[in-house]
Image (cartoon, rainbow, N blue to C red; front, side, top):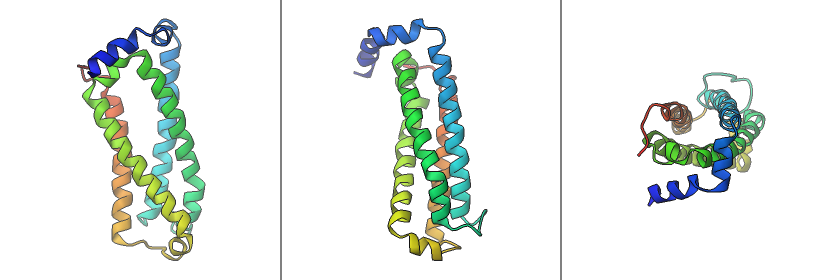
Length: 164
């Protein structure tokens, strides 16, 4: 079924346009990679703070206010650029096991980041007072950071795994 969808998608006029304009895919990849660097650097700084490894003098809500908007904005741009890349080369991505794993990791990372965002918004006072963080929160931060790193690794591996 996915193979059929890919075959249909690559025959659409939009896919043909993306494939036939030489600069679209490279520019899409550049935007995607630059946004990934924003997400990763923001996640590292934020998660290191939650784990108590950096910026201990800054409250977790202050760190969240500083870095979560960068994460969400970069993710939105990554969705747009990634969609263009998928439409332009559907078989390369959608049938690729590295891409499929990347998407599963992405869903988990976005869910965890969203839960953190909601938690900080609803309980800012608790987060303000908790300068050290409890073990489960630190482990969740480490897991979230691991997911983002896994996403970057899988994204890079797409070029090395044969699709379908």
